[in-house]
Length: 275
Ligand SMILES: [Zn+2]
Image (cartoon, rainbow, N blue to C red; front, side, top):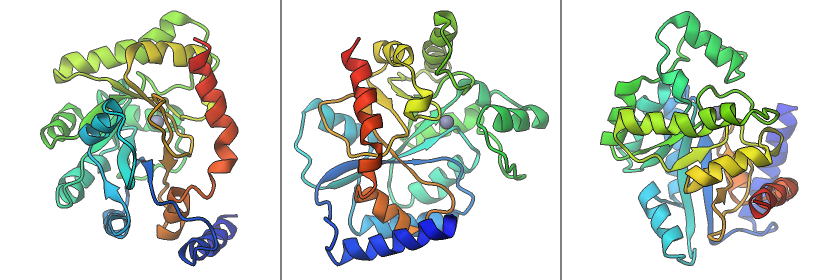
């Protein structure tokens, strides 16, 4: 299956390269990473993307939205979800070198876990990762303060990272979505106005979650692929996993697979209109 996907993406890559498939010239795309186990490969991807895409900082991203600026270039914003330890290494060793600023979405409870057994339990049960490696663990509060010092942004990503789609209890939803962001604000002394839905697909997001998040945050990040438009505070992101190479990423960023996610994007946007 993975091999088939790789072959399809290489073919599509060359179709885009040869302009047999339409090539995007101006779009705002957001990349979503999690743990980065190969820093060298990650840097190579950035260097390759830099040839065609302009990396924008979260501040520039906000400015574009605030001023409703027309998107005339190919713009990328980088985001990292879940707060893995590798993220601080990426920020210090690679993002600083390339002067790229990113957003890190962190589940509040995860950064407070100190015992190895608690961390592993959280990664397995709440982040739903099955293959646990020794190097897979969490950032701590000091790491987050360091990220802020390096001019990156911290975003909320619920308290426990549990799937909340079918949670009806408003108290729990408020705690998970709003209180966790407020806690971050007080311990980091920073405004937290960004939120990423955990798991991030339509099957993980309910209209009630959208309603609560919409009340509290300026921007709502999903895990649904798509190009971003300036008239919506719901943002779409391209999930990049550890196996993805430059062929895969180019195909995602070109929007070649966006049509598959059209229904999800429309439905999520309809949640906001219904409020
Ligand atoms: Zn997550």
